[in-house]
Length: 124
View 1: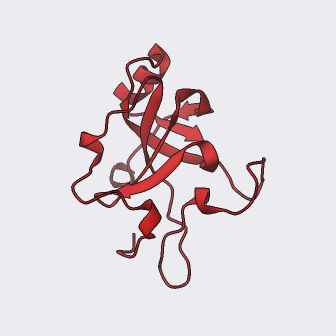
View 2 (view 1 turned 180 degrees about the horizontal axis):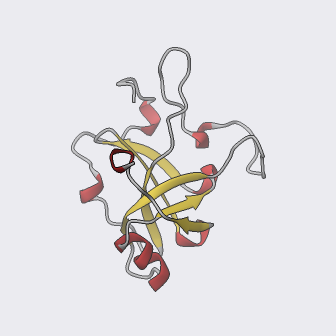
C-alpha cells in the first residue's frame, strides 16, 4: 500500500485495530483485496464514491478477516472470527479507514453476505 493516504480515511496516529472496540453488533474487518489506487498512488476507498448507494455490478464484493466484534454479534459471526474464515461484504457496507497500514472497515454484522475459507498467500 502506498504511504500516501487520503486525509479523511486515515485514523489518528496511535490508533490500531487492537485499540478499537466495535459497539453492539458491529464488526471490525481487515480488508484482504488489493487497494484501489489512483495513478499517483493514492488509495481511494470504495466508500468515497459520489454515486448513490445502489447496487452497482462494477463494485464487486470485498473480502476480509474479522479482527474484533461487538458483544451482541451472533455465534456464527464469532465462529468465522475464531476460525479465521474470510467474510464477504459489499464495499459500501460501512466506514473504511486506514490504521497501522491496515485497511479496516467497521459495519453491522448483517452486512456480511457469507463466509469462505481463507488460506494466507504465504501458505499457498
